[in-house]
Amino acid sequence: MLEIDVPTYSRDCLRSLVPQLDARANKYTRGKLALVAGCERYPGAACLAASAAQRAGAGYVHVFCAPESVPTVRAYRSSLVVSPWGDIGEDALPGNRPGKPAACVVGPGFDAGDPAQHKLALDVLRMAKAPVLVDGGALSAMASAHGRLLGEARAQDGFPTVLTPHGGEAARLAKAARADEPHAPDLACALANAYRSIVVLKGPDTFVSDGTRTVAVTCGTPALAKAGTGDVLAGIAGALLAQALDPFDACVLAVELHARAGLACESRMPALCVTPEDVIDAVSEAVANVLAE
Image 1 (cartoon, helix red, strand yellow):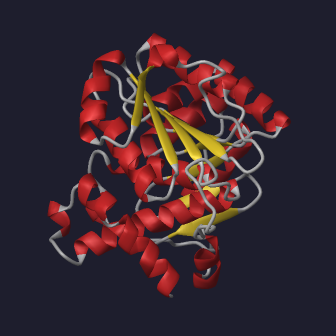
Image 2 (cartoon, helix red, strand yellow; image 1 turned 180 degrees about the horizontal axis):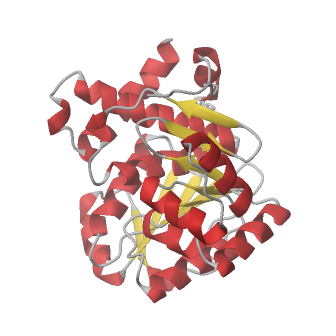
């Protein structure tokens, strides 16, 4: 439980952040998300993140995954556009254009020890002219001198970068940047400054920091302590970034919706039994819950 005073978002603030659809909206005006995920060993991470992104409102989700994973991701959800990693280039990754917002997520289902995937993560950070969320195995690329330089360059160019580490990943990022702090909110702030990014430090209480302000989300549940739920959070956050929310607000709302979806599942079944797929199915309930408050 949260033991120190860190602010949270009010109900009114959260409600105001939920994207509202224009009657003239199309799939591009609703936001395009490029999801670079799913190595040969972990195609399911791409499936979970992509499905969560669709449920969280992204108008167009394009998955780039390992060639071996393409058939699995295509079969998982027919509405997804799926391409192999070899198709990634500056022209393939969406950039923000007037009336056509976009974002990228890289890392769900990456093997942190694979040099080729490490390079791919850095290439995405270099090429993407839009917000990029770095998750999972791609965080190891950020914890390098090249990764920190790219974070700095992106910040100077006005392109937000979001890092979503759990405790172990945060410890590795902190060691690489010599930014260790004993308390989670201070660690989130230190990492945000070190990597010129917004940091979502995941845990029973989750802390979102941009290095200047830090916000807590305290409605988490152990029902979410299961492999794959982090991929769901990455997809939700990526979808909100792609819908042109302020990046800090997008991260706070994503964590809140993820937590509320977990609580909704827990209200219908033992927390022990909740799966990431259950959480995705409950995202719509979480959105309705926020809107109803």
